[in-house]
Length: 155
Image 1 (cartoon, rainbow, N blue to C red):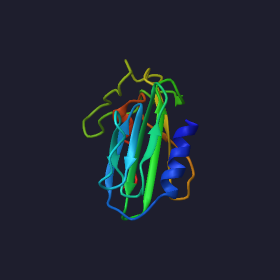
Image 2 (image 1 turned 90 degrees about the horizontal axis):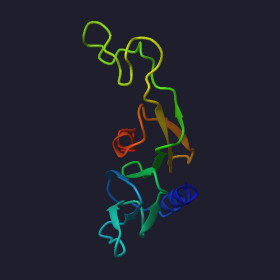
Image 3 (image 1 turned 90 degrees about the vertical axis):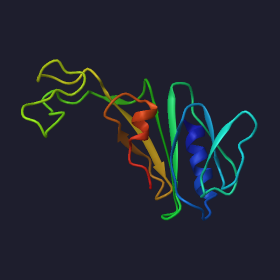
Image 4 (image 1 turned 180 degrees about the vertical axis):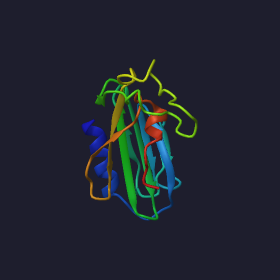
């Protein structure tokens, strides 16, 4: 995790103008590449117009990471979550999963309207070059590439 945070610091310091890109979600190692850049042999990368050289982003086993670049606002954001990491109790079973229909539709992990879902709400941790403060971001479900990709990214 420390290496991941360090990579964000490098990415935000190396910021230069470019174009906006969607969030890139990954496991293992991914490179943030300048426009037209190439990842080293054996690795993959995604363009991040706000970096001036390759930035290696790596996460540990069972960790999902992501990064996004937004040239318009000159922001770089990284986020990560761990499959066994920080989490809170699942949502209240009395929560209506579909408020557009009559009655209460149970959220996943609930058998009735009592207690909390058996599916915990994992948290991701996100950091951006806009102030550099790390924030806890609830995923609402387990830590996966899909749930991490569903958080609010800079663009």
